[in-house]
Length: 198
Image 1 (cartoon, one colour):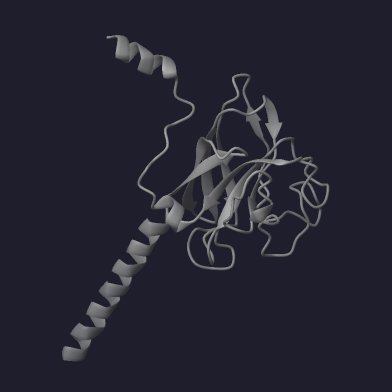
Image 2 (spheres, rainbow, N blue to C red):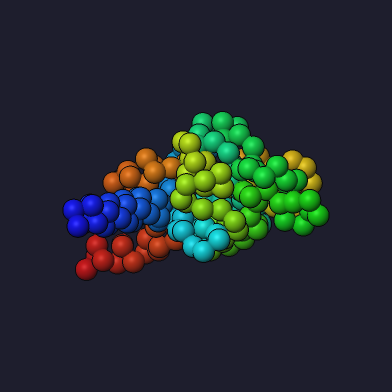
């Protein structure tokens, strides 16, 4: 009886620990910075079945399509963000969502920026997770998310001719634990001005 009670207590403790780990790892909010290290938006990552959902809100970009990828290191050293390393590619595939031997796990569809320089989009990192494992965006110190100056052509090596890295955000538990949350760049400042006048 004593061993049976100890066994069930151990199971309950494991369940609680797994649940706490899940809460710590999902959702993750990441602050996005431009080459001047000004905060220009956020990326929110949430665990799903067989994928990680990403909601991106960003401002201050040139209108049109921009390549966006998950990179292998949790480093965003301006101005070129080369510290982020290559695309996140734990399976050793070729680059490109249209490549027959692709894609990198970190390859994502291009995002479209509106005429006012903002984007508010939802994407999925298929096959990735925020939990433990080789395909975890939070493995080791974490990873990073990069927005490029140009569109990704979906096939060219090694990065789809997407141009320079213009926005970077660190994907890590430590980054998400930062209590100072950025403002939503897609919210209109006009509403705030009207409230101040009233």
